[in-house]
Length: 119
Image 1 (cartoon, rainbow, N blue to C red):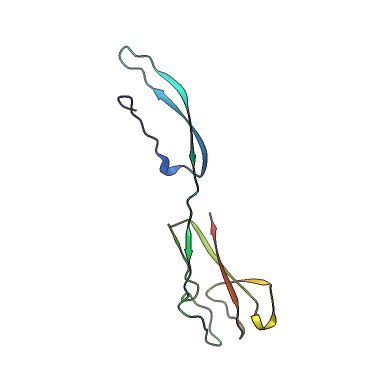
Image 2 (cartoon, rainbow, N blue to C red):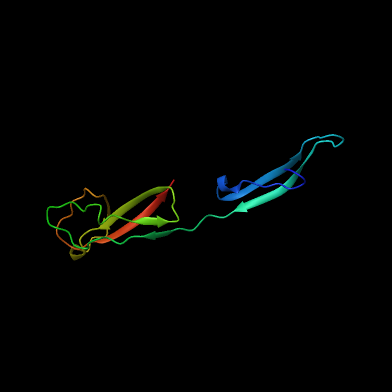
């Protein structure tokens, strides 16, 4: 704080409520003091996940590959994407299976889902 003006470095605060205290140092004829000044509420930043696979068909005997599992998030957020599929639509399977770029899927049509697991 200088000349009665201060600032709070809020870029490092996590989402939630944070209290703060203002303290002035003693100088010349002024005595030091501190007082509880209140709280700051920091909201969680919303993100948008974009997923546009480069192909929606896959060659038999080839892994899914990174061209299909290519989701991005904006603004940038810490975490990992987790992809899953439900079994071949022709089999009416509803069991979700986690997949990655090295996964081989049997012939069929699949419903795929992408989730960002934040840290």
